[in-house]
Image (cartoon, rainbow over all chains, first blue to last red; front, side):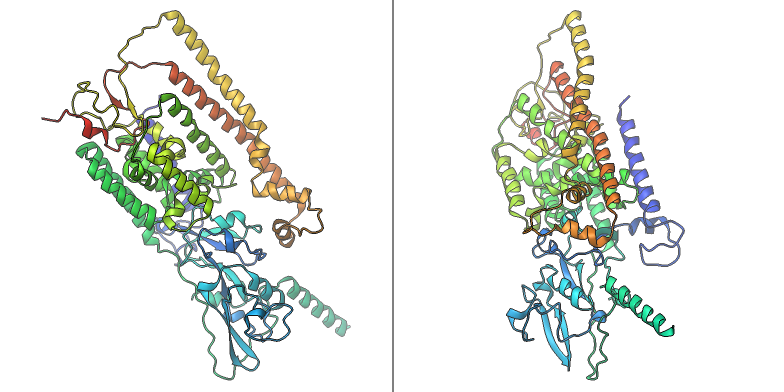
Length: 205
Length: 421
């Protein structure tokens, strides 16, 4: 009844069903165009198999900036960091993402900065515009600036998983604790999801 | 008329802007006069696809090499060096992800959730070790799995546990496997990954709890060799059962056992079956009574287990995110000082209907009810099987490795004085 052949057949069937499903039932469809590998037109079986790996993605539209990204990631500091979509930025002097809400005078002093690690750098461009850049190694992904920018500004500061830091855990420890269900697995060809009018142009960078 | 229309249009526009805080620029992008060039948003690429293929290649090559070392060369040294390589590659370089143990959950989830996109690596990492085990025994455990390699290194002074303790502790992996499958099938959690003891050590970066669990296992591993593999590993359950059907399995002696007893204490994992020479033929009456006992015992244990499991479906489901949210909506925080939870805040901002959340939660509860029956029945079957296993005494003349529990580490081979001519 139970013998080597049965087990082998069972294993082969499992592998076959899962492979078929992952190639055909997933995002990639043989013989038709799909968005897995970024190429247009049809693809063949080896290609479909090759490009079926997935990575974690954070949807900024779902994110409620709860701050859990900062301390739930297996990496210290977190692999989730703020990403500045420059094309969305208004270059405001009174920046809701940079300054604390009750600030009396606008300056670069530590006590007026919203960021707990001083990871946002403010630079004068021309009157009355200021450029804000993220010092990535300092950013811990607490989303304080994201909340501020979304509430008072254009929402150009958005949380994203930085894939040079993310180790792509089988189950993302932040996704497990995300209250807004903003994390999902996506094909590796489109790892980032930015919100905004011109975000599409930025994605290619 | 025109004016009021225009006004209405303006109100509509501002409403749209208010709803979409993202995607609409409240402050237009300035036109710079000083020749300022806008920097580009840098988005670093994920790990290259080709490297995933390399993982698969390394897995298959090392499985082949280790199987050859175990079955053909019978070389402990070779297995030792291969286990160091596995620890370096799958452990410290790949940082414990992807692994065969965790892939059980991916495979389960892919079967139950059709929208889940399983990667080819996960399928290969689940199936290949099982296929190799079906032919050569648990060579995957010997020197390809980084978990085993890590614990093998610290097994300095292994103690014998005795068959009774081994059997009782051996139930834990079955329960762990059952729970892991239940939680993966319902899309709740990947508990094998969550309670992974060594991944933090490989990343040199973990929470205190994870370091403590990993450290505790390693310290225990000095005296009780490979505690995770023997008394926790859920993938080991599958390998154990597949290995019992293996075509070739390592033998202690290359030809005939001469009963010298030199290998008796060589196995750190209590996986050598001693000879049972006393023939104790039972009369037909006790045999019949035993048979009747078994045929009633196993269904009874399965039913009892299933009933208990189905009773426990609510506590089991309480960790599910959907169930948690429904509970929080039903019992909102009444304390004035405490702000509403992030889950409620996210629920409100997502604009979902309460009825939908409740419907989803009750569906999850129903899945857990059925899952509880299956899990309980499975655990009952395991208990029944163990009792039956202890009742049957098998006649053996030689010292042989137990095909189920042997990790094919080749330690015992060096103790055998019989050499091939």
